[in-house]
Length: 312
Image (cartoon, rainbow, N blue to C red; front, side):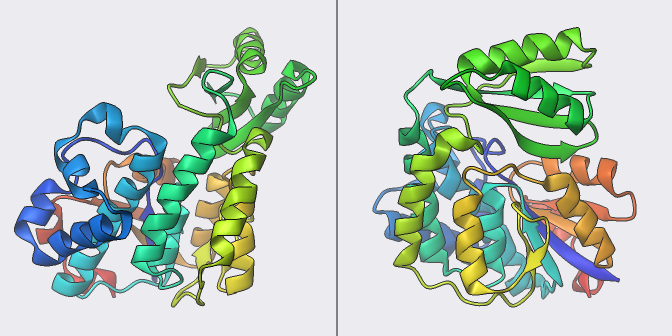
């Protein structure tokens, strides 16, 4: 029986996240202070007090989500003796997983995710890109819709393969609109544009990937203490060179979350803890692999309910 840690990605942020945890646990307070010091601005105050409009900006919400998850992780390690065998994260969450596993220092992870957010926001002019969620169609059908919706300079590509019939597509706004209309006509249960600031995980993010590669080149990545399942390959990895390469590729490649969860199950994981804000991943895991019992931990009472024996 193995235990995995799961870390959420962008979209899980909310004003007030981590506030009660930091009030209760000194190590959580220090985590937010370390983030503030690394970034040179008050990330903790933004998490605790908002404003929401600023917290949802990509360059802020990425380090904010990572910091909140790491605060929970550190509390559980210090207070409850948390141990784990594998880790995985959804998009941005992969950075948190690598940090928790020791591949990245916390300061580097905070700085790089802030830069990653800036690079991704700068890659595409406001309003040019879009993303949409398609429910109830198989991947092959969604790929066909994307191909048909594309035009010169207007890409449309699968971005998040979340499982349970949920696929997010990303690309030029006109192509996404065409794909949404086609998906509805093809019998999709639901097809709707998402409120996002950029078309993540598609070829339009290539400029961001190039800038991230340059930033990563100056940072040391160590071998993680446990394997981390990569979004790009849906396979556990421990090689630092490969990790750097996959973090760059992840910016333009789809998040293979369904396959990643199945990889955890195949590795013998029967218990998982989703650490941080929200519980999106718990719901996805339940629909993908019923053999994995997933618990969300982000608030003090959830920490209180955790016992070290449960994670051994």
